[in-house]
Length: 218
Image 1 (tube, rainbow, N blue to C red):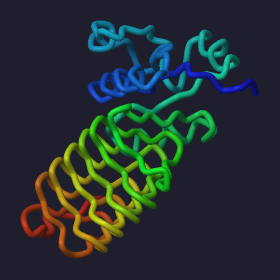
Image 2 (image 1 turned 90 degrees about the vertical axis):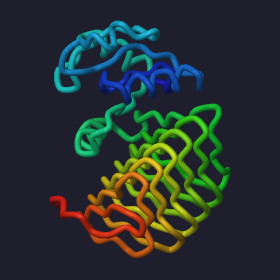
Image 3 (image 1 turned 135 degrees about the vertical axis):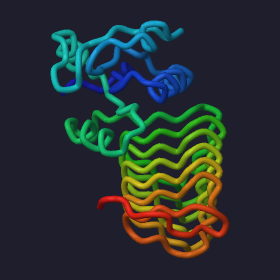
């Protein structure tokens, strides 16, 4: 395989993809095109208008040229299951990690391939972020936190020191997970919730303090 380049293929063409595209350009990537089921008006009208190159399952022939030149990919979609499925189609070395230049990532933190860190987010000492996980605008990941793969920490959410969040979990906008608390996989923490106790796999919690609302299929 040739040396990997700064050319980027976006998987997805919705609102999150447009945010990722602008972040990627700010971080020095070149957007070569996007893959989606069909060309979307949103992508065509974007200030960062780039060509549609087919679907993830059936890309156009242009992909071969970009692939041979070392292009990388980023699953720019909010749905955790789709992000997981799309990411699994590629070697981890091909998954681009996108970090906004106005974010802070501690040198002792680790970001797995395919992760996204938005503007004004902070990932502090010894934190660990899983594969294709979204740390969105102004989210705070404190020291020693462990975030699983395909998870989404929404804008202004805070995961306090030494807490843990499992795979495919959504921590809603403005929510707070307190120190040492463990949130299981496939869970949802509602916007603005304050999580003081562990959350089991597949459970949705809301409110202050957070309490269970319903279960979600594991």
